[in-house]
Length: 100
Image 1 (tube, rainbow, N blue to C red):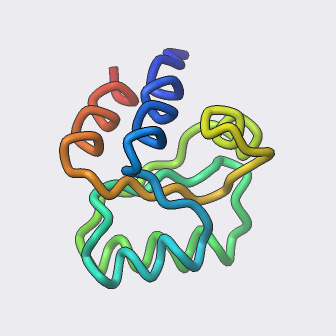
Image 2 (image 1 turned 135 degrees about the vertical axis):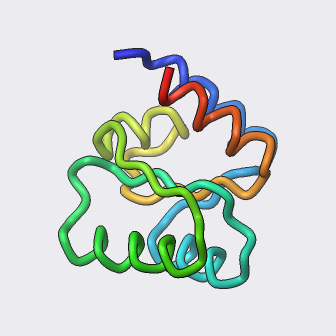
């Protein structure tokens, strides 16, 4: 699996284009500030449904990649289940790298 996107995620964090945490990401989706949502593969069913429903309603791309430890490590944290990308250019580039 191509893990280059995880390094790029760290770069997006340094640029201030990342929001983490379920509540923060859902609020940002509702405020139309998020352009891409990344969910950990080990996200609970309730969180998965809540976030994907919001993404579908607000027409935000949502992907499920990596586990929470990998996402957290890429962001310099312990673990993260939900990550939102607020910059449209970073979102587009990350989406391309994840699908490469």
